[in-house]
Length: 271
Ligand SMILES: Nc1ncnc2c1ncn2[C@@H]1O[C@H](COP(=O)(O)OP(=O)(O)O)[C@@H](O)[C@H]1O
Ligand SMILES: [Mg+2]
Figure 1 (spheres, rainbow, N blue to C red):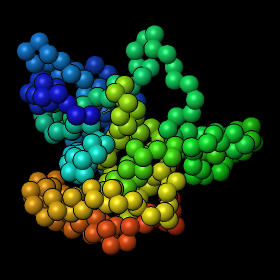
Figure 2: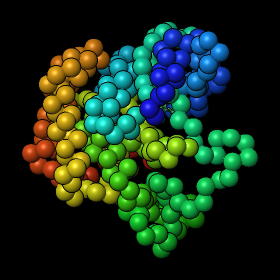
Figure 3: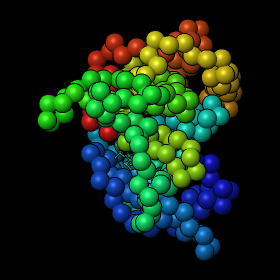
């Protein structure tokens, strides 16, 4: 979400109050309110001290990866990741991210009708404009299909995930804001040097990447050589930045979306 200059300042310098803990599988994730001079903004706060240890990612690095993913998203000009910073909070240093207001958040909002951008639908009722990803059976034994919309906003997110090597693009990490923009969240397990792409957005696997998208990727390549490369050094290792550069150049040289021929290509649970 592009913050108003106001929101950005409120998140950077505001006083933080925790208003709830977000039920989550692994990390300590809080919904907070930041207050500054009578202004307020909501945000997600993930203290580094609350990061659960993982076997494959070094301890205490998830907040830096979230910030790095935000910087990459900004450099692409797609603004997939809501405004993100690292700062001190009630439980120490952590990642702070602007909260995305979604339709249905407010009491009295109309629930949205029709399938979500990423959804699980009966296999014989896939609406036009949706791409199938995976066949499965529900509890009753009926065939269901994991699908996502054939939507340019998701297509860009799929490319973004390839570039940042996102290991956790679940349906629940795709948010539609009240502003109609589609946001991606939770990029703590991204930007590893080894291939860990795990996503529900496989609908374009093996398909060519269009020129407009590649222009943005070329822009990212250029920025990596300049200031962006410097800024990422604060949050990623040299090898991780080199691996990011290699994925960017690799996609420009061979502009085809990868296929799910790897171990565990879909995050679990998928939502
Ligand atoms: N910036 C955000 N705006 C609105 N909701 C968010 C935001 N970030 C996360 N959430 C919600 O909180 C849930 C948990 O956050 P997530 O970043 O996935 O944390 P965890 O690392 O604990 O899985 C997400 O699935 C999403 O529903
Ligand atoms: Mg999550």
